[in-house]
Amino acid sequence: MGTDWGPVVIAVVLFILLSPGLLFQIPARTRFVEFGNMYTSGISILVHAIIFFCILTILVVAIGVHIHAH
Image (cartoon, rainbow, N blue to C red; front, side, top):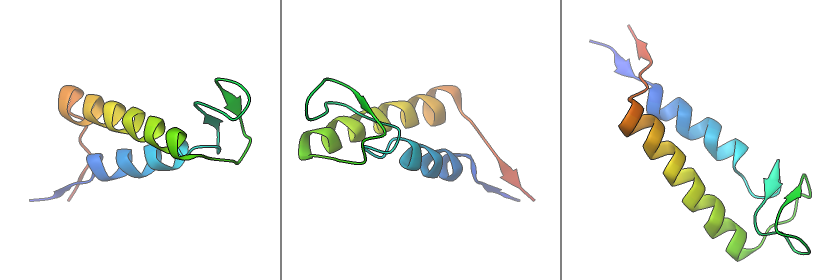
Protein backbone atom coordinates (compact mmCIF):
# COMPACT_ATOMS: atom_id res chain seq x y z
CA MET A 1 0.00 0.00 0.00
CA GLY A 2 1.59 3.26 -1.20
CA THR A 3 1.14 6.86 -0.31
CA ASP A 4 -0.76 9.28 -2.53
CA TRP A 5 1.66 12.14 -3.21
CA GLY A 6 -0.54 13.91 -5.79
CA PRO A 7 -2.14 16.49 -3.46
CA VAL A 8 1.21 17.24 -1.80
CA VAL A 9 3.08 17.79 -5.07
CA ILE A 10 0.28 19.92 -6.52
CA ALA A 11 0.02 22.03 -3.35
CA VAL A 12 3.77 22.70 -3.23
CA VAL A 13 4.01 23.61 -6.93
CA LEU A 14 0.95 25.88 -6.77
CA PHE A 15 2.22 27.52 -3.57
CA ILE A 16 5.49 28.42 -5.27
CA LEU A 17 3.95 29.53 -8.57
CA LEU A 18 1.14 31.54 -6.98
CA SER A 19 3.30 33.43 -4.49
CA PRO A 20 2.31 37.09 -4.94
CA GLY A 21 4.95 38.99 -6.90
CA LEU A 22 6.92 35.95 -8.10
CA LEU A 23 5.29 35.45 -11.51
CA PHE A 24 2.44 37.93 -11.21
CA GLN A 25 0.51 39.93 -8.65
CA ILE A 26 -3.24 40.64 -8.59
CA PRO A 27 -4.05 43.42 -7.65
CA ALA A 28 -0.77 45.26 -8.07
CA ARG A 29 0.25 48.61 -6.66
CA THR A 30 -0.24 50.68 -9.82
CA ARG A 31 -2.18 48.37 -12.16
CA PHE A 32 -4.53 45.43 -11.90
CA VAL A 33 -1.83 42.91 -12.85
CA GLU A 34 1.95 43.24 -12.68
CA PHE A 35 4.45 40.57 -13.64
CA GLY A 36 7.60 39.76 -11.66
CA ASN A 37 7.57 42.83 -9.44
CA MET A 38 8.54 40.93 -6.23
CA TYR A 39 6.27 43.13 -4.08
CA THR A 40 3.15 42.11 -2.20
CA SER A 41 0.30 43.50 -0.16
CA GLY A 42 -2.39 42.14 2.14
CA ILE A 43 -5.11 42.19 -0.49
CA SER A 44 -2.91 40.45 -3.07
CA ILE A 45 -2.10 37.73 -0.54
CA LEU A 46 -5.84 37.20 -0.03
CA VAL A 47 -6.53 37.10 -3.79
CA HIS A 48 -3.68 34.66 -4.43
CA ALA A 49 -4.83 32.46 -1.52
CA ILE A 50 -8.33 32.26 -3.04
CA ILE A 51 -6.87 31.42 -6.47
CA PHE A 52 -4.63 28.76 -4.85
CA PHE A 53 -7.55 27.17 -3.02
CA CYS A 54 -9.75 27.12 -6.13
CA ILE A 55 -7.11 25.55 -8.40
CA LEU A 56 -6.06 23.04 -5.73
CA THR A 57 -9.68 22.01 -5.17
CA ILE A 58 -10.29 21.58 -8.88
CA LEU A 59 -7.16 19.49 -9.42
CA VAL A 60 -7.34 17.32 -6.30
CA VAL A 61 -11.07 16.89 -5.69
CA ALA A 62 -12.78 17.34 -9.05
CA ILE A 63 -10.15 15.82 -11.36
CA GLY A 64 -8.58 13.53 -8.76
CA VAL A 65 -4.87 13.75 -9.54
CA HIS A 66 -2.97 10.87 -7.92
CA ILE A 67 0.75 10.06 -7.67
CA HIS A 68 1.35 6.75 -5.91
CA ALA A 69 4.72 5.72 -4.49
CA HIS A 70 5.12 2.01 -3.87
